[in-house]
Structure formats: C-alpha cells, structure tokens
Length: 257
Image 1 (cartoon, helix red, strand yellow):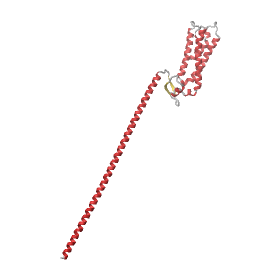
Image 2 (cartoon, rainbow, N blue to C red):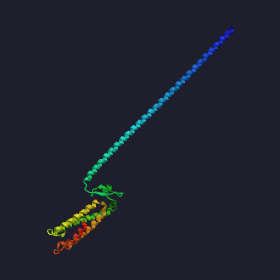
Image 3 (cartoon, one colour):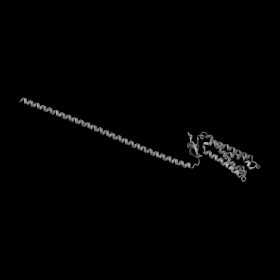
Image 4 (cartoon, rainbow, N blue to C red):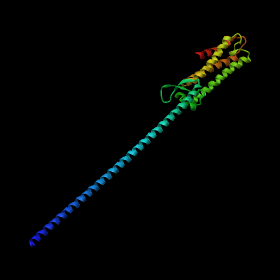
C-alpha cells in the first residue's frame, strides 16, 4: 500500500508540475502577445504621427504655393499698372509732342547714333538735357553757344528794325531802294531777311550744328548790318538805288548761298 501511495503522490506531483509549466507557458505567451500588441500600437502611433507630419508638410507646401501665386499675381498686377501708367505717360507725351512742330535727330549722350526725338526749341536747357535733345557738342560749349545765340538774335533784331524804320524815315523802300521803282530789290531784301530767320530756325532744329550755324550766321549778319549802316552814312540822292544797295545785296547773296 505504501508503494502505491508513493506512486500516486509522485504522479500528482508530476501533474502539478506539468500544470505549472503549462501555466508558465501560457503566461509567457500572454506576455509575448501583450508585447506584440504594444509594439503594434507604437508602430501605429508612429505611422499616424508620420502621416500627420506629412499632411502638415503638404499643407505648408500648399500654403507656400498659394502665397507664391498670390505674390506673382500681385507682381503681375503691379506690372500691368506700371505698363498702363507708362502707356498713359507716353500718350500724354505724344499729345504734348504733337503740339511741337520741330522734330529732329538728336545726338544721344554716350553713343554715336542718331535717334528721332521730338523736342521744343523753347524748352529749357535742363529739360532738353533730360530729354537728350541737346548733343554733346552743345553741352560742352553751352555758355559760348548761349552768348553767340543771344548776340546773333540782337543783330537779327537790329537788322529787321533797321530795314523797316530806315526806309520809313527816308520814305524809301526796304534796304534803301525806291518803293515804286525797285520792287525787285525790295523783294530780294525781304528774301534776305526771311533767309536769316530760316537760319535761326535751322540752328534751332539742328542742334548738332548749332555752333557752326550760329557762328556763320553771326558773321554774315555782321557783314549785312555793317554794309547796311555804311549805306546809311553814304546815302546820296544822285547815286542810283541799285548802286546804293550793292553792298547789302552782296551780303544777302552770300547768306543765300
């Protein structure tokens, strides 16, 4: 009996040990499952976080793209406004320039090319310089040209006044000729005066040649006025009108040439 009891006890102990081992295995399996579940949850969390970060980055990129598009639209609008303003200014300039009859080729600063520029002859020196209406030669010799131009205008005015007043005082035609008998010489003298006026206009239009033109204009007018004044002092009723006006006619012919 004792041996049977011992065998039973040993069997019971073995069964208990087996049960304990099974329980331990189950516990280990459960722990592994829990660890796996935790790892899966962590992975899911990480994936979610990554997805959220990607979404945020995409949103930021979209916002940046929208901002860039808005800036580009603003820049385009500004450019359009500037173009419209430039067009309006050009239209205004065209309107202003349409009132100016003098159109010439101006010498541009720093280049050797002629460009068509519309500029008023009566514009101030600073305005003409800004619009590049005045060539380098004129800029360089501007004080001398101004003095020469003023002197030439004085002689021009003196010649006109003298040509008009002197014949009226002496009851003669222009340039000392008889008003009735010397019509051809009167017309020639008037043509000389208009030629002088044309030289002034030409000097105003062709600014590049203004120094040379005004210099020759001054020389010829000195010759013409001097011969006219000499004719006044040497006036003689016995000398035919043709002889009296030879000197001024020669000067006028030189001006025409």
